Amino acid sequence: MNLSEKYLSIRKNTEAICEPLQTEDYVVQPVVDVSPPKWHLGHTTWFFETFILLPHVPQYKAFNADYNFVFNSYYESVGARVIRTDRGNLSRPTVVDVYRYRAYVDEAMNNFLHCDFKPELLPLLELGLNHEQQHQELLCYDIKYILGHNPLFPAYAPENIERNLTNSQPGYVAVEEGVYEVGFNGGESFCFDNELNRHKVYVQDFEIATNLVSNGEFLEFIDAGGYQNFKYWHAEGWDWVRNNNINAPLYWHIVDGKWLKYGLGGLQALNLKEPLCHVCYYEAAAFASYKNQRLPTEFEWEVASEKFKWGKLWEWTESAYLPYPGFKRAPGAIGEYNGKFMVNQKVLRGASIATPEGHFRHTYRNFFHPHLRWMYSGIRLVAEGSKE
Image 1 (cartoon, helix red, strand yellow):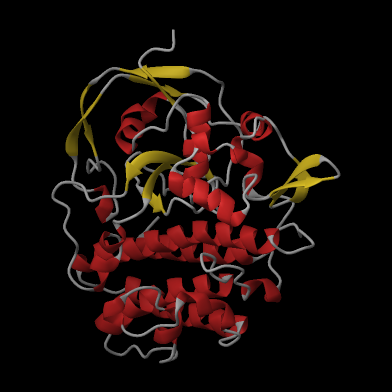
Image 2 (image 1 turned 90 degrees about the vertical axis):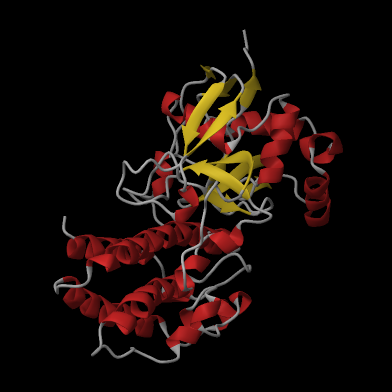
């Protein structure tokens, strides 16, 4: 697949994710962390217009001069923008307008990719494609949150990615103590800058679970009063539980005395064998404490990841999101992509059922604030030393 075909394939996949939606679904923003689907469609288009077409195609004219203000996300060096909390107030541009914008930019990009452009633009093009794939996953999170907080609990589609949410056989695999290399090794075509530079770390011996924590296991924690017992929680986590009246993972509901869970297929009985998902770091750490175990560090996860199956859910780690040795921000707006967020966040490793094909890497570092749980996030536990 050449670059033009890859571009069009990724762009079409974004729109395919939105196909089951009704027009009204495109505009809703229930909370600040959720962006309306319409905004994602516009923002990913704005990226190619702003960083590829406008500076590198002299004859190109912007589709609409106001769209830089509407669809800029957090790039301070690119100009003013609509604040994040107001994205749901954008009744205009309409959904039709946004799809016209995508078609306009796609035509210009297709022409550009069939010309002799400068080779030094290839990394920027690859970043744009991977950026769109990131937003495809965010679209899945946001669509589920929008529909899952509709009082009617409408289904997204009967056939959906959650049908692939299965677990591995229980057990543990051992990792010997020693010095290991972690970080991107150059063996694949792309990585984000936060995966650089490859470096050595020391880990002590540990054993890590081959399966993710299941709904049934977490229900035992709930039934044992886990959300009412402060001793399992970090102080911040305990405050979060009390201030927000948390008593279950996101999308769990008790109806007529039975646990139900909202999924992309609608509201259904809780599957006890299915991997637990939509928990935040506070919940993950509390459950680990309840089990007298812990979460892996991101380096332990990476070292051990060839020993177990992963990729169904993003997995919380005990690691703070920090730069690797020798990390440097790129010059200009692209330097704002990752580096400025390296504070007050936790690293998640792996991938999820919402991660696009070809976007998987052992070295991928996802990151979120510890209270967030609308993404497809789960728990894998670590036992110190030997479990025998």
